[in-house]
Image 1 (cartoon, rainbow, N blue to C red):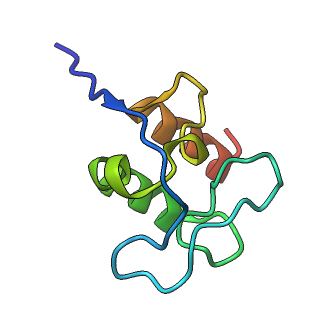
Image 2 (tube, rainbow, N blue to C red):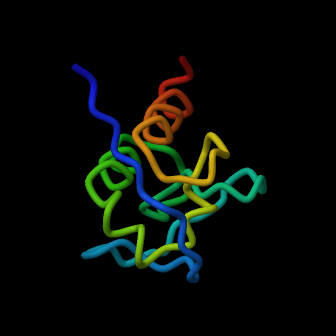
Amino acid sequence: MIFILVIPVSATSIIAFPNMYYTPTDIDGDGKYLDCNGNGYLDIQDLILHWYYMSWMQTNQNISGFDYNGNTILDYNDSLLLYENITGV
């Protein structure tokens, strides 16, 4: 059985994730904030933050910046696309 988490899009500004100092960055200028920890490059911590704080992002982040597949909802497919960007798969 497969469960899919669907979280509706909300619009706020881009802010730092909990317990993080830097705000997420759009390192390639495409409007998507792949660098979730704001350290200037893609790494596994970006994926962990994106996955772990998915429900937190619903009310605290501009979801369009983290909706990597463009389906207007924040879901685990977005985390999978982030993983693919990090690993180059």
